[in-house]
Image (cartoon, rainbow, N blue to C red; front, side, top):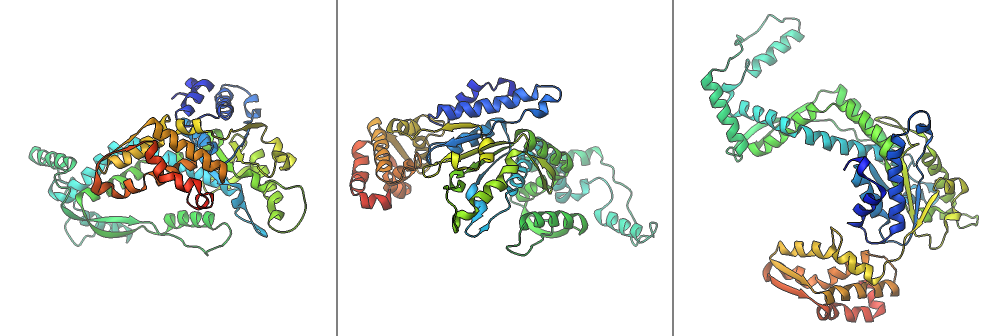
Length: 470
């Protein structure tokens, strides 16, 4: 969908297809996304001055905080990364480098754009792969001298004796009409899979991998840079493998597609997308909020982690192996339950960098019914299609769906409230015997209120047992 068509109302409508309720959070992210489009249309120096208004989502687990951010990124094909704030703190010492979230975001962007480029070149890469397979299956239709002669001549040139050759070199072959017809037929047979099961021997390139010291700080970055350095210096190792034509076609297709991609342009585009469209979702922000006291122990590093995150959120330049990346216009979405701590427990500087705050509501029984049935990826539809692959026709009645939602709401009240994730537990419990017997059983299964009661009532009544099972 074009950016100009993504009005806030359209964005909310798209999010409604996957996430139930939470209108305030959807409106907040929709406005933030539309502001990016508006900023692109601002000219002059003011464009650089307009920074994104980061969002802090407050609500219990399982109500859709992560899903809203993930679906938002998918909507505009933006680089997206989710991190837990607690991964940057450990008992007694600061854990991973906070800047790694930006490096991970760039890696996500690289993978996304590479996949796009591969999709664009797939037809040409397949044609080149078919050409290589035709050379192997029928060398007589190949254009040019044999590969052995080419290799010998290249070696002679390197040794300073370009005119010497131990074997007579053949003049370049020219295809006659008959050879051209034979090759054309061969390529068509390769495309249609006529030779798929035939075994052939192919050479595959292997890139040397550098293995650093386990546990060393910055190992990931150092290892990646060393791999790139070695790949450029050391000769590529080629190993022979015996594979089917179908496998060889995929190998050649990947190699040819990689050759067609301009890696430098890919890196520049990846960094541009991160800087202009990147979204970082920082979960468990409440776990690094100070409790107001000063002491020793696990809490001592919380404020330190906040101060490490602050410059990234404020806007700074992070050095990655693909080049420097500015975070001034990256959208940061923080999230946390904030049951024990409050957003005001965060350091003032970090509070100021999340000016938009939205509270997400706990899910009710009616919300659970909607989640089970209405979204595009509704759980009922997922389980129905899963078991249909084994020949079981699942039929959920309205009373059965209502009973599952009622039990999920009840257990959330009696134990920990884990939101919509409780529905997964409920459905797995209800359908356990059906899923186990499905390959041998087949047929139709009707899930009504009585069916659900039979499998959940006893556990739900025993609160001690429900703590362990549900």
